[in-house]
Image (cartoon, rainbow, N blue to C red; front, side):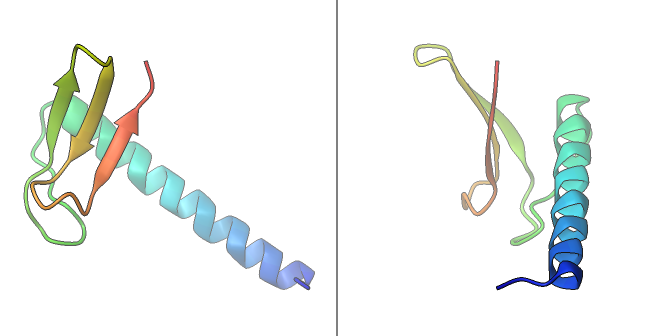
Length: 69
């Protein structure tokens, strides 16, 4: 069972992760060069018009973020 301090720590980590990912997405969509936090390869935008899917990912696919339309 989680106590209050563990829950607060989890909430802080989740919020930090969310804001980091939000900033990364914004920078890529602005055309700024961003690298994968895991493999350091450049991130790119991939659009599949047939399926209506837009993703931000690195070539190794260790970062793979699907964007909502």
